[in-house]
Length: 441
Image (cartoon, rainbow, N blue to C red):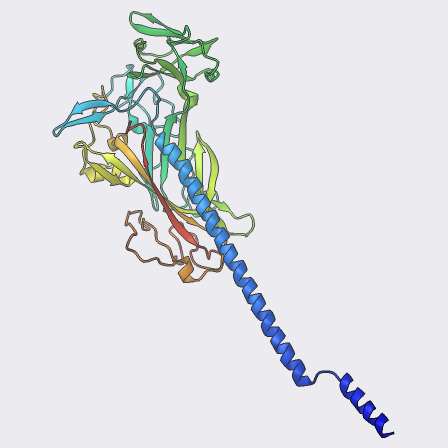
């Protein structure tokens, strides 16, 4: 009996569970371990999301800069019809001046997309060919609460407001133009020009197989150039022949030199007008939220280029009459720094009074400034949200090399909220200097 009782006691002790204290300790350790794993997972996920956002922001910035730089390098390009290359004496030395496009057209003003003011100089004799200043191939606008110079009525550029579909305040606008076709030779492959009394009346074109197809339509204008003289003419095109006679109220242009590379282009369809601006779009995922995006409009057809571009500004490197280079905003270029600067020599053959905004024809370079945000809210703190940007809210260039980063204000210059749960984002500045190829051959 005694032995049996002892065995029963041992069996009871071996089969009993954990005590309450042991269970509490085990649960506490488990919870601490689970909390640690959850915290590690959350931190890793947040870090991965931040890295993904930074990578996407970097990719967007590079893509925007690459696209804009490509267009700005082509500014005023006319292939063999180069703007520059003419030396003209000044008080100090010889200075390059430019050749204008001469317009042979009864239409006034001459039709150019998004530029309804491209009319003859006010002192020009009626019904004579007039020079189209190179300034019409580039036009910038400094914009805060309004734009300087004012954006002409009738353009495809959105009006300014802090609502969806509008252009946000505080960001610039830039329009550039260039010819995007190699055109067709009027001296090679049995192509020819017909002249009467030294004046051109017809161009016959035999295109090479590698040439672009003809794209002339009724009412199109042609650009005819021999790399020295460039003329815009009206006419009609059929079966490889462009007839100039009787389609404008002025004397036809002279015949082109066949010693260089005379060519004809469809000026109406191959002149590309590119405008860059910002536009506010509704966020499809968050009601009432707006996203500021960079747009590229080509001949009046807008296309969203990059989301999350919060600011867009430009500085223009312009050459004055003494050959000195100045970095100016669009407003300063347009009014010649309040009249403190004089313009470079006028284009060859320009005999009219000085034109308004004549510094635009001396743009040698353009510096691009973009402020990008992460688009998605990251619940970032003030330190993470801090950034620097080269322009203040008044549109003045201030530079940032020595400035300390600061968090965004409660309301941005665009009118959007700057620092709340919906707009808690990272921001970075991108900048690039572009040399205008046509002015710096």
